Every structure is written in structure tokens, then in C-alpha cells.
Image 1 (cartoon, rainbow, N blue to C red):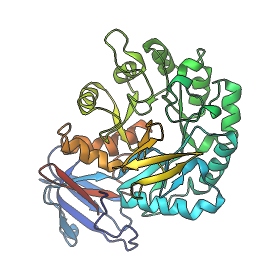
Image 2: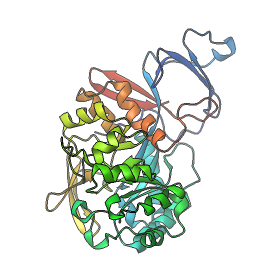
Image 3: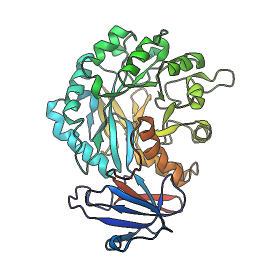
Image 4: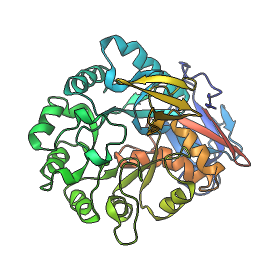
Length: 390
């Protein structure tokens, strides 16, 4: 069941406000916060610090609930029935509607993900997203840049990606796919073993594009080489890659212990076994949540088109006709609630995995004074978690 914030996400009136008795994700004890008319965080002080009289006019008691920034989703493939590899100029209103929908689901920003498709589709989609990127609007989810998941993937680990569009990973092919869109491309998922020289990773790193390893058969050694050349992320841990093995850690094992490599994972109860997810979260240095949501997110279960195929969505899980797991339709912050419900994380840890960790993965600002803040208030009763926008 989707969580709809109790506040109007299109509210335009700005008011100065002091929040008291708040727990803040990532900080000990309780705090009071002061937001100015533009929702900039001007003061963040321990509760034991006195609140100036002039700040006591508009006070809201948070009653010990947790506060955090909104979620950041670095892997989401579509929304409200629109698949991101298929967007055209006519879809701009729908894209804005998707941004509004994600905002209502507690997401501050996202990387629309274009999965393996034709170069024509990739370039068309990038040109459309370029019109919305770099021009953030208030009270709607921001497009942070595009995530290209493919087409440079290992055929044996392609999963639901269409094999006819997979390409060899060469510098020439890479530059052809990127064309003039490097500034809008935030992340590229690729299989590093397809380029033993690692010159493609080195080139992407020079273009300030985050390289994420995925849909791959890379060994531990090959992964470590890729990290040394600048790769810094793993796409949907455990999925479309070899499992952990006691004699070969593989790409995932290497990533879990490598300094400054961030591992995305899905917490929908289908993509990763709960016990294995607990092992992963105890061992990985830098995990973060993604939704990996497909185009039907925001729509009911049913049968939907997916490129030239169909997917069937049942209880939020999407599968191809051959039963291949292709994704989910659950919003990012459902993963937070699942981690708490399953007893894998406490609430603060789970919130951080969807809000702080993905920001750190892309070197985005976290809770900082002087910056505009879109805050979520989290409430917990037993293992039931809800949130609302302030």
C-alpha cells in the first residue's frame, strides 16, 4: 500500500518554523531546528541549547519522531505507465506528473533509468530528459541525471534486458552511445569484464559519470581492477551477477569490502532473500536502497506492455512471460518500511539507507545549514512505519 503524505505536496505558502523535540537521522540525542521562509535550515541545535525568544513564535513539537531528508532513488525505470526508454516530447506532461507522484511518495530526487534499448531510443529519451534536468522546481521530485543501465552488459547475465540491443564495450561504442549527452548522464551500469583494458571506465570517470558494475560475470580481481580505474558502485546487489562464494568472492564480494564503493540493493522481499539481505547489510561498507521500479509504479497490479514484450505485476512484483524477474512497482520508501518490518534494521538505519547513503554515493549534500530542506517526519508504532512531509 502506498504512503501518501498528510501534507499537500503542492503547497506554495512558505512559513518560518521552529521544530522541537526531533530526532535527526545521523545525529545523536534530540534537536531543535529553525527553517526560514524559503525552507532553508538556519539552525540545528541540541535540544539542551536554549531557543531564542524570537524563534518561539511558530513551534512544532515533533514528539521524538525522526526527521530526515526525502529519499533519493538512483534506479527507477518508469512511472504511471510510462517506460523511460520510450519517452518522447509528447510525454513531458507525464514526466512532470511522475515527478509529482514521486514527491508524494517521499522522494526528493531520482535518476530516471534507461535500460538496454536501441541507440535511437537512448538518444531520444536523453534529449527529452535534458529539458527537465538542471531546472529543479519546488515541491516536486528533481531529475538528478539519467542512469543508463546498458547496453554494455554481459549476455549471460542480461536478465530481462533484450539481447538484440546489447553491445560490445569499446570506447568507440561508448562514445557513440553517449554522444553529446555526457552532462546529463549521471550513472552508467556496465559489465567490466567486457573491456579488460578498463579504458572505458577511465574515460567515463574523466567525464564525471559514475560507473556502476552490474549484469556481469566479473571476478573479484576484475572488479578490483575496475574500482582502481574509477568504478564506484554496484547495481542491484545479488541480481544479474554471481552469488557470493567462499572460494570466489566475485564482483559483489569485492564491492562490499572495497573502500568508497556503494552497493545498491532492492528490499522488496523478492530480489534478495531476507537472510542474505541481513548478511549483506552487516558486511557491506556502503549499501543504499533503490526501488528498481518499472513503468507500472503507481498503477494497480495487472498485465502491462514492456518494450515488445509484456510483464505481469502481482503484489508489486513484475515478471516476464517466462517468469524472469524484471523488477518491482513498489516505491523506494517501501523498502525502508520492509527493513523495519522484517527486523533487519532499526528505523534510523533504514531511513539512512534511502536518504543519506544514496546522496553520499553521488556526493550530494546531506543535512546542512544554509541549504533548502525538504523534511520527512517518520513515525513508528511497533513495526509499522509511516511518514509525512513537513
